[in-house]
Image: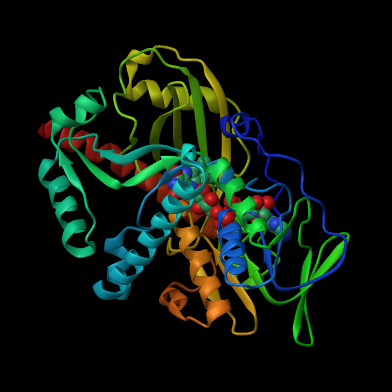
Length: 429
Ligand SMILES: Cc1cc2nc3c(=O)[nH]c(=O)nc-3n(C[C@H](O)[C@H](O)[C@H](O)COP(=O)(O)OP(=O)(O)OC[C@H]3O[C@@H](n4cnc5c(N)ncnc54)[C@H](O)[C@@H]3O)c2cc1C
């Protein structure tokens, strides 16, 4: 398991009630299913299995949502980390449409669970995606294509409409996705854990799975003090453990990204409670949270340690878009690790022997982890085989350290391309 040098001093931890620590696994426990990893993928799978009448044990190495699930940007929207254009190129439009529909079910699941149990977890509606150069035709075409090919409801905002909501000369046109929303991901994860327990799942914290072995008809999952014997094992460790299940472990790359939260702002620059992002692919997504604080996500690297001076770097990004902010105090800054497969799509599958996996959700995991949990629970409990739609995106070797260098080079290329586009279209404007 990766020894990520994570700061636990996040704004989310400061504004959530974790409740008492759950017990460590000790002794022998039997269940139909053992889910490994207490992030959103593992929690949704456990909840949905329990709802379908299966007995479930979930093992979490540290605390629930200690990984990306409890420290992310909180944007929930349809789709995947990979763009739909590339998905369609690989599997054809019809199969891509079916996948997009599944991703939409993930968004709807999250929305419904929050509405039913604790609406205060949701922090705002909609997502405005802004471009940093003027190209109305391209933005309009992208909006029209998503509507035509995927039935995605989407609006186009011209420069005036864009700047009425996000007051910066850096932005030109934008799209608005009214089906997206944003929320407190740690409170949501803790809510799912409670719901899973109410449905009958048993959750153990500080219980890293050390190895998994086949014994007769069952899998034996061992921790330091105990073992779970189960017909099915579901691997949901993302990139935080790449050795426990080798076929997916070697197919997932850890990619780090960062979040900073300011003091409450007084400047009138962000006039919307929607989520916002801009065309810098390697960053810049943000939203207002709590008492008017700016939560800013950005920067992507394959270095897994938290860079020193992270807060200053994030502040620099904020001020480059909103110079009026002056010198805001950064009250919180932290990093998180995502898991990416080389094709940027989730790995959802099975070996046909009772081993299942739902991992590599990349930077688009809020809806897709829910989708993955639903698909696998239906497959295990009801022999449904819709999860096979992900077969074209199976686990392939991610190239070890060379793969990591390749991903880093890819991001640097995207950053360079963003800057060239801005210069090119900026001049044209
Ligand atoms: C900073 C940041 C911002 C992001 N912003 C967004 C966003 O706005 N919208 C969006 O859609 N997505 C976003 N993402 C991506 C999203 O958070 C992830 O895709 C999603 O949370 C992945 O969930 P997961 O359950 O697969 O992994 P994780 O949440 O990482 O969970 C894996 C869990 O497995 C546990 N584990 C590991 N090894 C073992 C073991 N051996 N035994 C037991 N347990 C183990 C870990 O402790 C961890 O709790 C962001 C990610 C980051 C890091």
